Image (cartoon, rainbow, N blue to C red; front, side, top):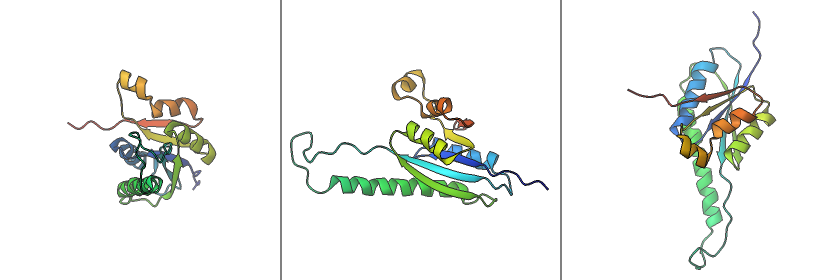
Length: 161
């Protein structure tokens, strides 16, 4: 029997239901029983804000807001990865799973990570914004689909009746 080539499949995850839908879809459709594909969960933290010890009203901020922000970020990463774990934990097949965390503009970080990891495929959810919202906010999935060299699957959230 011919052994199939291992594929690296990057799934971009975040706090949204859409990203968990993309993860679920990829497990159902891209990881057949006995496959030796690797699932790479990629979470992108937003860039750190510019910090000043004086707030907008001109008062000196006490405590360490940077430490509090880093703690919050760590908890957010753990939360997203735990939600991802609940999606893949009951999957019948043994899967190789890697977890990666980046920082910066999501669309740039995802595109760079896909290239650096030598990914064979990118799976990403979409919020399915309308024209105006997409024009204002931009679409991470559209941006990545135009720029990465590997196939991109954009998963829409299932519509429940």
